[in-house]
Amino acid sequence: MNNDMGIFPEPAAVRVDPDAGSAPAPAGARARRPGVAAPLSEASRVAIEIRALIERGEMDEARQRFGELVTLHQRRASRIAYQYLRDSADADEAVQDAFVKVFLHLPSYREAWPFEVWFTRILINGCLDRRKARTRRDRWFVGGEPSSADEARLAAADATPDPERRLLARERRARLAAAIERLDGRQRTVFTLCHYGDCTPREVSAMTGLNESTVRVHLFRAARKLRGLLGGKP
Amino acid sequence: MIARTRHLHDDRLVECYLTERHGDALDPPVAEHLSDCPSCTERYAELAQFMETVRAEGDADADALFTPERLHAQRQAIARRLQGIVRPARVISFPRRLVRRTMTASTSRMAPRWAAATAAAGLFVGVALGAGYEWGAHARSVRQTLAADASRASRVAPVAALGNSTSDLADDVFLSELEIALERPHTRELQAFDAFTPHVRPIRDESR
Image 1 (tube, rainbow over the protein chains, first blue to last red):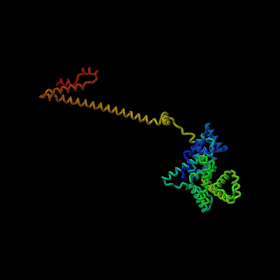
Image 2 (cartoon, helix red, strand yellow):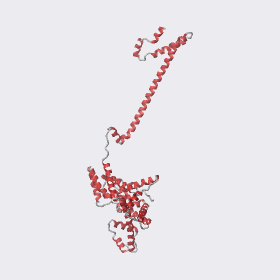
Image 3 (tube, rainbow over the protein chains, first blue to last red):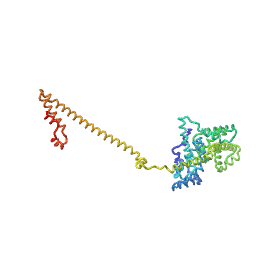
Image 4 (cartoon, rainbow over the protein chains, first blue to last red):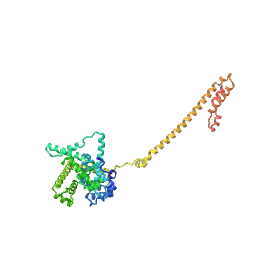
């Protein structure tokens, strides 16, 4: 079934609450995967330090250190959120919400999983919630053009003086966005995380609760479908 | 070693692309096949170019929208929201008892029960008092009616007695006694005082 919103087979189990730092994957998937045994990343180290600061009650210092984490991850988070939502204002809010949620639940973060994985799970779940809300809203109200402001910004940012080239670039963007939108929900998630989030299939597996080989299959199918839709070229 | 006659499948090519993109080394047999087989090399190059172009387009869009200024504003917005959450609003503790009652969920659930019980008790007491008052008013009105009838009978008694039967006289006496009994105080302690006190009726009767 091409389920646009229900990305994962077991939403309740895969659904990430921020407390899931210690055990983020469903029981079945965890049994299949031993876990991501990688050395601590820079972000994970900073997250652990912030957690210690919060536990000691040094909130000002914790907030200051958290700013470093935000700086480290916000560009990547914005890219992922924008690819999910295709609206920069929505994506901006989703990124803010994810960071605030992460800070609030940082005491429950456990270093068994890299901070990036934990944070990205929270972010993509927030994005999925927003997509659901948007779909619900569009069912009852006449939808506006959410990306018209973005189009204006993109046009302003485009330094090409040639109007024809600007128009072609705009059409290319629209085609690519439409093609990604036509992907199956899981394929889109896997493709977005791998391509725009710079995640490995193992990390995507940890984020989504899908088997690593399933992630690879979804990625391959997404690439094949995109090539079919775009005629080999975006 | 992978034979040259068997070309790499597309999913293997995607895996190769991902592996190379994350800076890892390819499987030696796959790498050897790719270097030896021009067809697979061409397919791999085409796939890699397609994926890179898709990625570059998407990243370019996102980066054009999320400019450094916007990211800075986003950082500031996050910092503001964290300040607001970590330092909660000061709660004025007056009236203290009321605040405490509203803060706990269990007492907030109990409050409607208390209100309902109080309302029911008030309703019951109100109905009982109302019924008692109604009953008292009714008894008073009965007594007043009886007294009025008795006085009317005493006034018409001389006229009726002129040529009427003895039963009318007996009725008149009975009503007069009833009237007198009603006019007397019902409290036993006051009846002695009442006996010493001159009454209007006997004086009026004597004057006649």
